Structure formats: C-alpha cells, structure tokens
Length: 488
Ligand code: NAP
Ligand code: MG
Image (cartoon, rainbow, N blue to C red; front, side):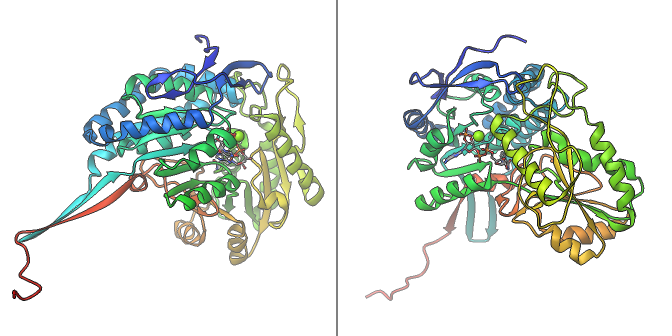
C-alpha cells in the first residue's frame, strides 16, 4: 500500500490546505499506533467552507443534471479502481476486517452510480390543461451541512454526498474524529473532480467543527447519521433556524424466528451475522432475537455454537470475522453493557474482553449471547458491539408488542417458510426496513430509514432527492383573466 500522508488537511474551496496548526491523531485501534495527523477544524474552517459552498452554489445549481451525473460516475470509477487501498486504510483506521470492508465500498460505489442515474429522471413534473400550464420544478436547497459517524465511513460519505450533489446542492461534510482517514483520502480525488467549493470536507470534533456547522446561518439543510442523543441536538439546531433536518439514528432491531423455518442452521447463521457484522457496530444490527418456544432449546444450542465459532482476530487476517472496536471509549461502553447483562440476564456465551495475539492494544469483545426478557437494559438500549439478546416467544401478539417495545424502529428480520405469515408480520412491525429470510440488504433505490427515534427521512432511494430539493410551482395562463373589479 502506498504510504499514508503525514497530515490530512481539510478540503475547502477546492484546496487541501490547513488553515491553522491544530490537529488530532488518526490512531490504529488494534495497535495504538498513530497513523497520521488530521487537521482539527473549528469555527474558522467551517466559516471558510460554508462561504466556499455558498459562492459555488449558483454555478453548481445551474449545471445540467447530465454534468453532475458525469462527475458522480467519476467518483464511483475512482473508488472501484482503488478499492483495495481504501479497504486497507479503513482496516487500519477503524479495526474492521478486510473480509467485510470491500462490501462497504461496493455499497458506496452503487450509491454514486444510482444517484448519477436517478437525477436524470427527477427534474420536476409538468401538467397540461389546454390554455393553462403549470410546472413544478425541483430546485436545490442550497448549502447542505452533513455530519457522519465512524462505523462505515465509505457508506456514510456516499449516502450523504451522492444525493446532495446530484440534486445540485453544495456541501460541507464533517467526518467522524475516529474515522476520517479514508474520507480524507477520498477528498483528494473529490478536489480533482468537482469545481472548487462544491464539496468541502472539514474534519474535526463534534463539539467544535460539528457544532459550528449546525449553527451556521448560511447552511440551508442539515443531514446527520449517528446517535439519537446527538441527533436530537442537530434537530434543535435546525428548528432554531427553521432549516430542514434529516436524521439516521440508532436501532435495537428485532429478529423474529417462527417455528416453521426449513433450515435451522441457515437461520442460525444468518441471525448470528445480523448481530455481529461490522463488529456489532451497526445501527441496523439485529440485536434482539425472538425465537419461538417450539424450537427454542434446539435453536439456542446451535446459536451458542455459532457464536463460539466466530473468529475474533486482527483485521488484516483474511480469516477474521470480528476485529476490534473502534476505540477504548466504545470498548468500555460495550463492557459496561455486558456488566449490566451479567447482573440482569443469563449469559450463554462470551461476556468479556477477548485477547488477540498482536492486538494487545485493541478492544476486542467476545461474541456474546444473553438470554433475557425485553425489559432489561441490554434489550432496550443500543450497545454497538457483538452482543445479542435472545428472547423466547409463544404468543404472536405479545411477541409483536415486545418487538415494537423499544424507542427505536430502524430494521427488523423475519424467518418463516410461510409467505403470508411473513407479510402479515411485516405489516405489524414498526420498522423502516424489514427483511424476510435474510438480514441487511440495502439495495440502491430501496428506501432506508427509521421509524420513531431511529430517524427522520429516507436515504439510498429516489425519494432522497426530495429531501435535498425544494419544489417551486409555476402557473402560466394564456391570457390575463377577465377583470375582477368592474372598470370605472
Ligand atoms: P455520535 O456522538 O452521535 O457522533 C456522530 C457524529 O456527530 C460524529 O461526527 C461526531 O463528531 C458528531 N457530533 C458529536 N457531537 C456533536 C455536536 N454537539 N454537534 C455536532 N456534531 C456532533 O456517535 P458516536 O459517539 O460516534 O457513537 C455513540 C453511539 O452512537 C454508539 O455507541 C451508537 O450507539 C450510536 N451510533 C449510531 C450510528 C448509526 O449509524 N445510527 C453510528 C454511530 C454511532 P466526533 O465524534 O468526531 O467528535
Ligand atoms: Mg465519535
């Protein structure tokens, strides 16, 4: 892999240059090694980036959708050609596995291509009545401020940039302090592809660069992915300035197994994956597994065996399925939840920190299953680690009430061989994404987003362009109407 840069400056107005001396470190969570320094943006950088985005807006908004489409396709092509290097950068920076990260990039590439295509058919609509015409035109909203978390950086950047840029907005994006490296590598290419000021990337801390961006009077829309707590702050900031806010927040998703499943081992494998992919650090994770009483004991035994087969190891080992958590903070947070599980529930496997040779610095967590009820803290709160709550169910209505009985509503899974049963269950679940006989399938074009405290708005789909545009109605008459007031 070619070397990382010693310093990653912000991308502002087409230039990659630091505006000040402050930096923070990009740290390899597996080894503790400092990988690079990153400029620590604050009010000054946000002001400069928003000013650049504001200046670039009229020109960018006036480009033809075909031109915006062409540039987005260049991002996708570059990313595809550099997939191996970008995978290495993320594995170094966030501790996730080289087995899994390429899928992030395939998802990201798909988003640039999807919105490059979708914008070509999303240009408002016309209605024709003889003698009178009305046109509803979509227009970009303006300068968009976007803030993202650390768990899947490539996907987060693509979900935010691709629709906003396709729709003709200019952008100031703040990546997460814990996962800025691959975004700053990508920023170097964005500087080559887009006109100056169209895309600005300001790394920094949430309370500094993030807060400055959300409060900036020239930002016309805010888009955020991360915790519900910070999401609430962003919504308040948007409300105080009356700008629209879209939010993708946390989850505590139910995964429901009916007794009529055909292949128990396949379902065990898929529900294990649902709880542990991304090292368990996914808002989509299926962390509450409801298994029907008729098959519960057998399923539980096979589930525990599946969790015990998961290879915890160094991110660069191709056999590793679970790398280390992104930081000590996350590690301690997950262990605190595990302690509460040990006090309130029954641990079936795991339940502690794992040691991995060569990864002494890393916060590796044993894949953990608790047998519990829906009212415990581990069953109610988002843990963001490889920790699953297993629940037994018998009565359908009670199970549905429990499945919906959390403050979140992002995703859900259903496993059954009866299609009508699956569809009726899907109807009853308060979740933005329901997967049947599978888990985690985000297809370009299929809406993604949450009910309840999991968020506001939908990404990944054509409707996302509605979040990043505003509608103008223009009415045209053939003749000025007859006089309303009688002539004197
Ligand atoms: P977070 O605190 O919500 O951070 C997400 C982003 O918001 C980061 O870029 C962060 O900046 C920024 N931010 C923080 N405070 C801000 C403020 N006052 N104003 C503006 N921006 C601000 O999430 P986290 O600390 O990374 O993770 C905490 C928990 O959130 C996780 O354990 C998990 O439960 C949940 N989470 C959910 C998702 C999801 O996809 N739904 C993703 C990640 C985390 P910095 O961190 O760089 O300072
Ligand atoms: Mg953070």
